[in-house]
Amino acid sequence: MVLIRALVVMGIFAVIAYATYALVSGTERRRDQVARAGSRWVATHYAVNGATRIVVRNVRPGTDDVLDEHVIAEIMDSDPNFDTRFLEAMAEARDRAALFESEPD
Image (cartoon, rainbow, N blue to C red; front, side, top):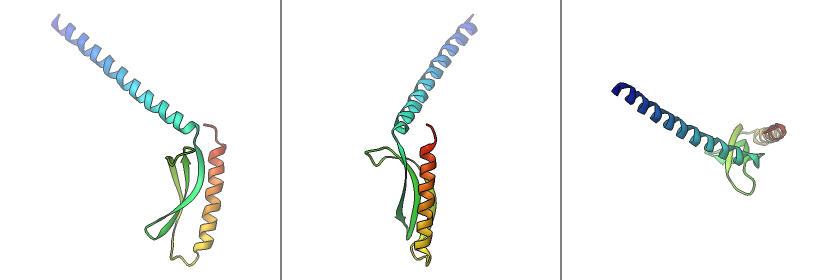
């Protein structure tokens, strides 16, 4: 009889723990979906340790919040073909941004 009560209590705790987990993970998932709903993909670049990194970012409009980032290329600033490589990488980044924008949410 005591064993049955202990199993019932443990079962109740397990259900409560699972329900709490499901609620928390569901809330995070919905928050992420809402954040991404108004976001857009943009091609950009920035300096990092003597190099220029060309990326495609998923950003929330009106803010600087970066939700995702894909590195297209990283070019050393001292590279003799910097201009050519930079323009090619930016063209690829713009194409990738357009591709990501065309995908349904």
